[in-house]
Image 1 (cartoon, helix red, strand yellow):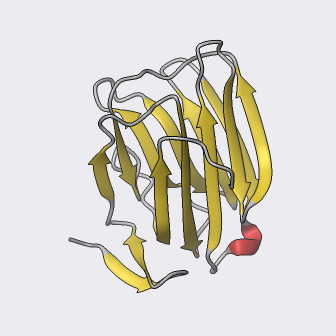
Image 2: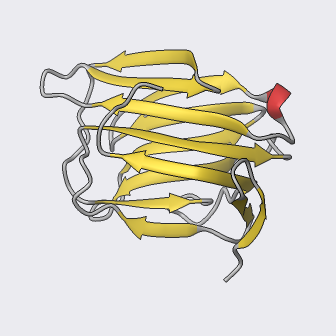
Length: 168
């Protein structure tokens, strides 16, 4: 009910005003590899705000979370016992749209890979051998954490979630 629209990169974008969020099921979503990308425009990047979170809808474990805090965009991949993080400073992008993309790969050999891109440029990659994320069905929440806090005050445009990694 609280969703509004503002001018975006391509036509209109969704404005999430710290009380609006979108949540839906990713039933059948390929949990082993994927691409998440979007354009975002925010004015407050000092308070902790969740952009999106993908989590297991049975155990409530987080799989992937993208958040902003203290002028830093963070990609956090975790399960119940371990967390891996990639981050980048976004101070220079306050008040304008910028493109964010994340590719991820979980494989049976344990070489899990998370790659973060900003405006099409490679930022960082983390390769992790500590855990694997479950294959159960996932939910995604956009604009707030799964605990209904860390709400987002930003516009999001052209959000895309795919089942396979693509070149950015």
